[in-house]
Image 1: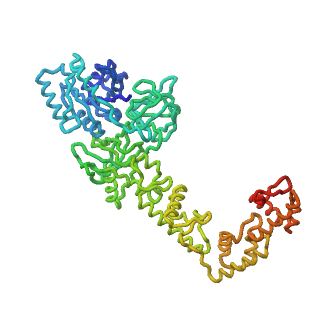
Image 2: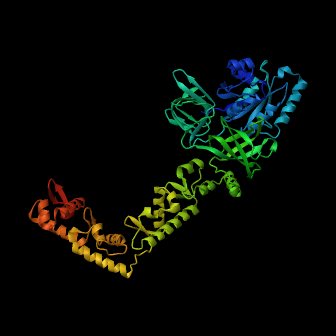
Image 3: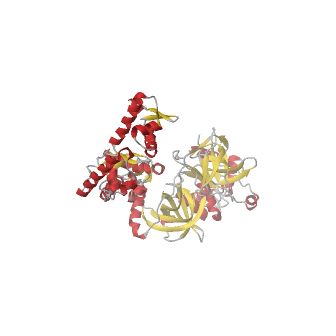
Length: 606
């Protein structure tokens, strides 16, 4: 069963770690440096038992300004927050920055813990309460409990535990690709690499093959834990530890993934600035996403329907991300939080001035839940059906095989097929039909084999084309011969009749110098059944075939078998002509070879 993951946040030395120790008995300042300096440097995690059973996972994050990245790493996966504010100092700059960041990250709920109340009198306590209430006004913590607390006297401990018990895990997507941003890694002797984090999406089972993104490095799961307990499976929302084989150099900022995940250096974001400030167009920024921090540049696009701004972030290093992922944007120098928001399009094309208006319009449609811009951008080849299902649960507007697109895309494909087929008929007016590969040209080349086959079937079903043998033709198309072509046909017919069972091959036909497009005439005669191919000879007429079969039938009426020599005798063929014929007869089941003889095949006896 999923447990809530609750983070602590607040200014340095306001008592976050002492709060966790009071609730759990565990000191999360574990490193010598943390103990010596009296501040939390890295993320700390501990299970907190609750009255009446159950527990929550507490994440203690740093408060120092220089460690905001680590703070975001811990806060990205939490379900609720305890904002810790000292009753002695009140809200400080990092208090407000953490509060802004928590809002940008979409943390849904929480409470405020007013710490160190044993160090102030009643009057200062009231002033601190007023200061906190003013600080959280207009934020997601407005109206939530403000809990006086002392790690020294124990005041407020029960109230904090009661509030923790009221928090539940937020709903996270179980479908789709598995993704877990890594916030801690370590090597345990006898086990190897262990990575921990909060599962963002999907499900992972023990033994599964995974990919470490954005590097694309493959690895395998060799053990799972959920909130410190061994498990066979982890799902979205779980606080998980994954033992990996072959993980390589794994560090915070990586994501453990299964299935298609967007790995990109360009994302479009619905952005809100601190205090409502406009996005700094063209500024060099640091993007904090999940547990990663990357440099990049911010480009302003326009406005969103909800009053936020739309921006494009062009990153120096790719990130593994998804629609709805929360981000924080900070200035590179001086270090300060500028704003944040949610990724709207992780597959965004680079913003070009010439199409900036259209880009903004597409982004607005994506923001309002219309996924068709992804299909429009994927034309003319359409979008892979698997990619579509990863991006949205909506049914695709149009499907061709394993590709999806808009209805207009499908109609455009049909028009392209008709146009290419008409061009083929003009190039080859004597061909009854076109081989499919001959018309898969231009924009149709963007379609894969399955999608093109589906397009052909759709065109047939709508009466636009007909299937002719192994080729296709425009509905109603008929070969139209000129007077010269008809003369050439008559000449070819006479020559093939005269050749009899020996037939004529390409060289022999060319030697006649008939003129015109003789290969096309041959194809037409073959399609009409006037000629049939015999490998090794060329083409023969049906009448020649019938003569050969009649000779075989006559011989086998008085004999059980027919040696090659007997076949030559009854047909008058030399060895050059006899061997190709015998092989053709065997393939077509007129005869069956038994050692060096032939016996009647199924086609001859029926």
